Each structure stands twice: as C-alpha cells, then as structure tokens.
Length: 232
Image 1 (cartoon, rainbow, N blue to C red):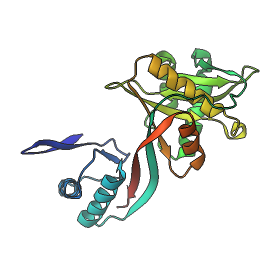
Image 2 (spheres, rainbow, N blue to C red):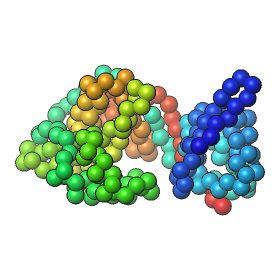
Image 3 (cartoon, rainbow, N blue to C red):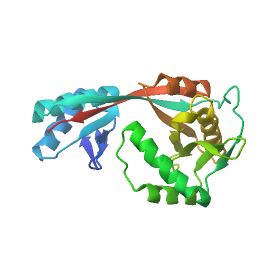
C-alpha cells in the first residue's frame, strides 16, 4: 500500500496484493509517470494495473517507458451504481433465500467455477470463502420452484456506506432464464434495507448481456475501468 503526497497533500493512493495487479486511485498522466518511475527505481515487479480507464492507460504506458515491459489491455470494465431497484420482467419462477451451512459444498463449487469463468486467480481458498459467506449471511440463491438453487449473488461488507454486489453466477445450462437478474435485485434490495447508502457493481464490457441486464434492474453507469497486464 502507499500514497503520493505533495505540498497540497495526498494526491493518490495505491494497493498492491501480489500476484494481482496494482490498484490505483485516479491519477494524472504526470502523477502516473512519477509513481511508475518510483516503483521501477525500487525494483518492484508488477503483474499489471487496475484503475479507471485513463489512469490505467497512463500508468501502463509509463511502466513500459521506465521498465521496457510489454503491456496488454486485458479487460475493460464499467462501474455501476444502483438507482431505483426494478424487478426483472417476467420474474422467473422461484424465490430468493440466504445460503446456509447446508449449502457450503455448492458455494465452494460455484466459487471455483465463477473464478475460472471470469479468469481470476482466487485471492483465498474456496472453502474459507464459503465459511465466511455462510457466517455473514451475505450470499443469496435464487431457488427454482423445485427447491434447487439456480443462481447466486453476494455482497461485500459495507465500507463508508458502500456495498458492492459480487459473485453473480448462474451455471451455464441455466442461463437466459432471468435467474441472475432476480437474485441480483434481491441482494441489492437487502443491502439498501440494511442501511447501505450506495450499492455498486462492476461489469465486463465484453459482455453486453450483463451490462444490459443491470441497467434494466436499476443500475446506472458511473465510470469505466481497465486492467492492463505487464510482461517482464
């Protein structure tokens, strides 16, 4: 972790959790260049950068200049904020329910499948993740009419009034039936009812289906982000 400061005070901050990309607050091109130069001079090895679109591009370019490392745009994302929650139409058969101890095995399985599908290296063990989610009660399933879970969505712990929707997942054979939208509406409403001032989520801009879905259920675009990978 770190932060940059000048005579006017703190101008930016970064978070680095190897092997994941460095995460940056919004920086100007000059600030991004100064940070890249400093980290390169310290001999830091970075796998990539994740930040708002312009900051990520500026830092990736600066890292290439200062280290010679090749950089590749891996992912474009969009941050959304919930306005007025709107139910999916038509609402799919079934209901939402909180995942419990009896669902632990399925949570582990779906967590692994979700990480594989989105191409993410899991920060933590799937079983540890499932235990924590069950204890906090912040994952909900959409349960079909026969009682079988068909989709899940969770929320992050509240920080400064903000909650983020995470881990929205439907197994491939069950997609296209409105399950993901229905369970996302439920966890979003639950977060608001629990006192969250803002409910946020990120989408992959390469997936027009999810971007369209979230806007239909009340989410509005805030800002675009990007992830760039670095070679050695």
